Image (cartoon, rainbow, N blue to C red; front, side, top):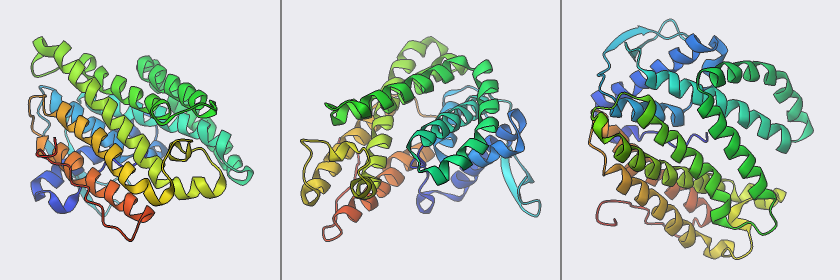
Length: 305
């Protein structure tokens, strides 16, 4: 995805950070086990969060142990000694997203970058075929999202909500899929859990798309690239920061409201750290770059909900 869904390490306890590292390193191992050692290079914070959310929903409690890092044999790292489906789902999502992102880059990148992507494409295509064979619904969700995204961005009458909807819908479908693929702690509440996860995923996907667009605003404006905040009807750059703040806060608040309806699991504090601390800090830093003379109050907390 985009790399914006990560932890705020300064506000995590040591044991919580070790648990997060355990999930991160376990996903890295899963990518190597299922696809190849080179697939480990596409490891992302976004898919680590997806694995974390899946583990938080399931009845299995992962046990952690120390092992040698595959990239640095002189370093030991914690990893979950678990065969949970959460990791294979997150690994499949990682390679499928990476493949379609590579295809998208082939369409949008300058010629001197395209030849590099073409060299990488056979490897990514092989990983994607294997992942799609095991999880065809993930491949269908991501492929449909990319087709809708391209169509929306080529529409002369495109508006912000239309541009953000494909990514938001993709995350909604991916989060809803967990209710069917994961052995839930309370299986009798599967339909309710699915609805909550879909709502949470939709607004997280909307936030990710919009914060990425805000981050790319200056570059897209300079190179005349597509950006939803450059569409007609959007505020001028000097007045854009307050609009961005309100739009991003709304999406993040709705994701938090949805997550609050779920029964809290073992990774609750880490998930809240991402949504309440890290995401807020990221959007505040991005918006401050657009209007450095004004400090933005980007706090999203229970009172603002």
